[in-house]
Length: 159
Image (cartoon, rainbow, N blue to C red):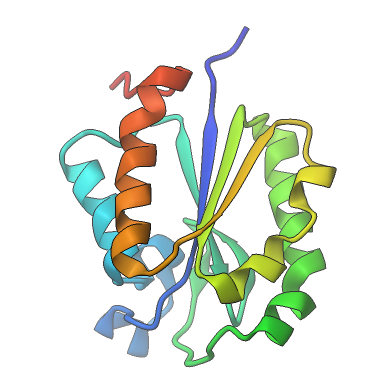
């Protein structure tokens, strides 16, 4: 049996790298907001398991894998835009899950992003947790708690 793998999905953010104005960047490197700061700190402190992948929901691009390249943009997520993106987002997550067989998919987004993942659990044959951040500080705390809980579900950094 293979080691458990997890997928964390968060929403993009308004704060982006200045470098993005000049060239395309990997999504993970393009976004610089508070949730990405939590992730980068966990990686620096070796608390981010190699078996945890990162997905991002973007108002412009829909579902992104962390290494997908993006260009600079300025678009805010609305409830209507999230509904438009729903099929593409679910399809992207399903496709990645089919190749990785994630044991858990944890979605932590702002309320306007929730419609983009509406119905996800119906299409995925694994544990799916979807949470509203509930405000930035609360969202950061939920993200830290999730990262810190990974060893209890078998996702630990082995490298």
